[in-house]
Length: 487
Image (cartoon, rainbow, N blue to C red; front, side, top):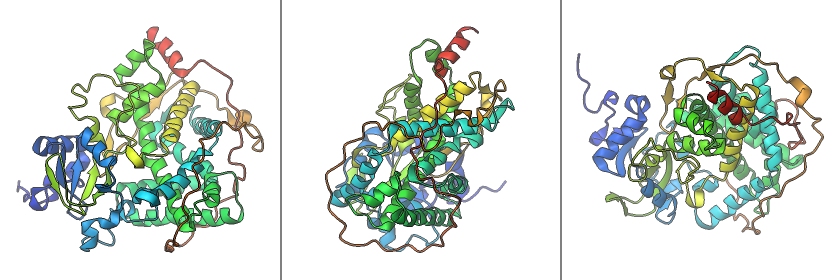
């Protein structure tokens, strides 16, 4: 057999014998790739991203926090990327949906970041927490109804991939009918495929259309609150932030649900602690965020000037990849990966510093409440295949469980018997205090042209309408613990 040349993608090596964060080697086993890089370079390693453009990936836990918490050294403004300035990024590069500058808080620092981030956090702070939970319960029950009579299900495609966007369509004030296409488009652009740019255009166009509709017919949803916020965001700024929220809420939360369900069904540490009453589901979810963070790596920073990190000389304009998965298993922080870290929230899954994920509590609520609802409905849920047959697929930023076949005793669907009238409002719970009035925008953002998708079905003007909660039952982990003790 002919040996491929050193720079062939089959070797995972490119110009300068640097390893690629994309291609066969990276996608086959990203964890092994990170450990090769750690062994060779230490906490910070030189790598190549799409187009064989040089970058750095941070593998150390402490070093990741240093980059996340120091925007004066490691900026979020991608316009300073050296390869942008030198014209090295192809117009069809799959990197663009994630790194091309947009009028977003995640691409801003300083006062502009405070203005944009303030609008997002203030609007999210107005979300009715009980209402969010009821949406999650309602959609979880709807999804379970679709397969509960069969006694078997594939939980990734039939549950995990559906729930987050269904919930987000309600929080943003979108018709539920938007969900399926948005799921497909959001996942595609996160994978960095050849169609990532087209998928990004579809998501953005959908959000632009929604903003125009809410300008003329506002409601009690996140989009309407962004429209009315004191920061007076432009339509393009709002649409871009909605796109960000949809993308950030979808693929990472899908991965979070899938990984958590996998742990529920397979991890002996989980079952042992559960049966002994030593942990709760929220504690277990933190273990998932340590071991299998929803985002493995993220192109999140650019060097604002020449600097040094872990002995590596980083030049102004260099891209810095945040190595979330690698940082979470840094041997200096976790010398023994078999030691449980239930409830420990010092992982990197939601970033840290001024750009810490503002939707982390919503993501936790979707996963916690969704799984709790699923297992209350199907308390004897179990894996239908040997654990070693489970497969995952990887892209340059994420690792995705392909399928999670499960079986259970057939159950009756709830149907509409659990749904209260949509006009019934729930009591509003305390909101996060609003931030003070922020500076107003100095200029309009450029308009992004795109063909608008047609309106899909009626809008829901009462996105916080209540859905009745099933009658109280003992929690699913108590049910499962009792069943385990009986074995």
